Length: 214
Image 1 (cartoon, rainbow, N blue to C red):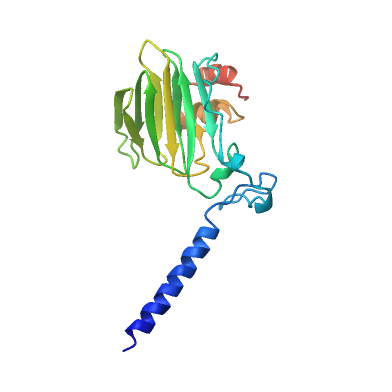
Image 2: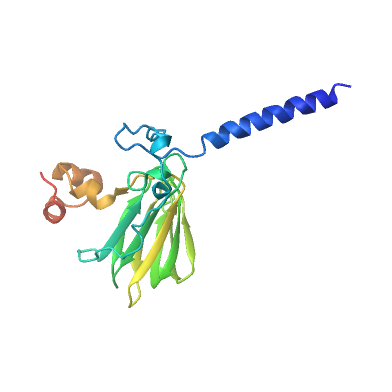
């Protein structure tokens, strides 16, 4: 006998929660505020425009004149404030032949890599002490999934320029390159030697190349 009433209450609650969820469906970042683990504070709605939801950084290829023959154009939340709270981000990767994205990891997100042009060898190394390499040579139209936090790389193994688009499940997936972590800071060379087995002479040579000290 109470079923119609309970259904009505459930419908009202569902409508209320749906409306509340919709009201918070976007929060364009106010980049002048402090970033927290939950994102940036919201830009005042009165100042939000349609242009806030458009990112044009992927229109043109990036500059690949560097030792890695690589350009990374990031659309993370600090480049594209509309991503704030949406658990999405992307990167455009341009690589000349023999170009490489060095070993790196994203601590806060898994990713999918879409090959738009070229032939690219990419892979990741599994964790939990298994250290298995999962690598594939992909061509235009193929996609590879990279689990969260695992070391991975991309190498243009073809003879023409390669273009990739990478999709993340976080508005700020974070990134750490192995070369930067070891050779682009003041990590003492003798400790790098002790913790990696790379000789101090080689460590110092790499620090000179990548801008590290000690």
